[in-house]
Length: 115
Image 1 (cartoon, one colour):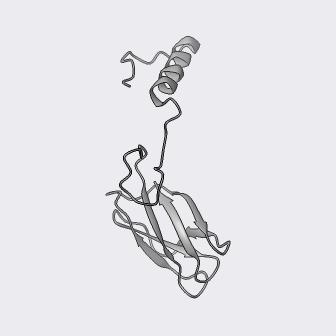
Image 2: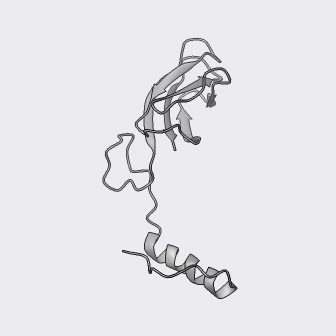
């Protein structure tokens, strides 16, 4: 569904109409996709997903390849099998093809989503 093309008015009615238009277009269909693959047809948020196992020592850098084609903004979500928290490496900057993380636990099997 295409949005209505009209200028945004900064009046309360104009803002209400813009929000209603966005809701009509999106209709609750915002999605990262239904699997950890990066090829789902229902995925409509630019993101890159990765799975793997963190290093055998906690709080050690590990690097993930991504397909965003730009430096990611943030880590949108993650899960681990051992309760570890995945966080951005304070040492290695992210690039247009890689992101470096650490895990608070050793050998954490993880899934993560970068946006």
